[in-house]
Amino acid sequence: MTNQPATLRIATRKGLFTFVNAGNGADAWSLQDSAFVGDPVSAVLTDPRNGDRYAALNLGHFGVKLHRADAGGEQWQEIAVPKYPAVEGEDGVSLEQLWVLAAGGADRPQTLWAGTIPGGLFKSEDRGESWRLIESLWNRPERSDWFGGGYDEPGIHSICVDPRDSNRILVAVSCGGVWETLDGGDTWQLYGQGLRAEYMPPEGINALAVQDPHSLAVCPAAPEVAWIQHHNGIFRSGDGGRSWREITDVQPSTFGFAVAVHPRQPDTAWFVPGVKDECRIPVDGKLVVTRTRDGGGSFEMLDRGLPATHAYDLVLRHALDVDSSGERLAFGSTTGNLWVSANQGDDWQCVSNHLPPIYALRFDPDTGG
Image (cartoon, rainbow, N blue to C red; front, top):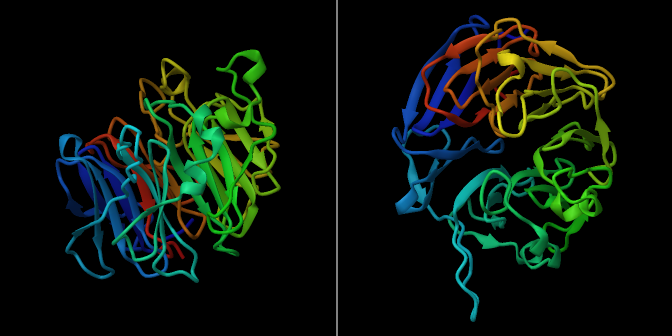
């Protein structure tokens, strides 16, 4: 169990909320700050290299906005958003949502990556002041096979930069599979052997470019180990995402949206299961988190402190996180409930029942010990 100080950023349908734990007790959480109250916040990032904070807003009629607060400051300033270039003779493509933000490697302190709907990957080399579409991925012929899952258009929701090599990046697309670059985005390879898409006709179940990885995560200490919470189950890779092994017979369900991986123990991962497709609620109304510590060989159901009946909480793909200690976890739901554990999920504390629907949450880096 950890009693280290921690900061947790919560992106919701009605604002960005910051909760802190001063380290004087595992359960001593309090609301420190709120920003953009009333506005939908679709993504949040605290840059592990310098402490800058980023928040993406989806303002409907007023479009997508991106804001940055410099490390140590409280003032947010609006910066550029990714923009699709105009192509002569084609209808314009517009940004619908900024779905995920990721920091570049430690050796590139001003580089950011952004995954968007409708399926574009963007790169900034000046802390978000300008953005460039990665056309090498956008122009791949396989993109014509991509399609939307929960949204009408496909989207890039997971960007995993290898901490050993900033040029190696894994990207996951719903629905468009798993992609890897080894040269910083100049070229791409589509992977995913072993994934399956049972929503496709029989001849297309194993097609790589139509897979729906709901969330992709890697172990920072061993990035060759990756986990996917897929629309059709839980999958693990030991070769950097090139091939995958399906993990079955996990109770109460292998369906879900989120996955978190221990920062130093690649065989330890957490999931929040539910009932697919139409229901998307906890199985039998009982909210649980599942955990494996042996690479998927066995799973535990963790429920101490979680509601055992009449729970209708859906946990979205960015709404589960583990801190840098590997001890503290947090997840939030579309019903505005927020839970935190200080002992790897063995026990849970409800921090709030009254937040707006939670889209994403992230611990500030290096605050967990």
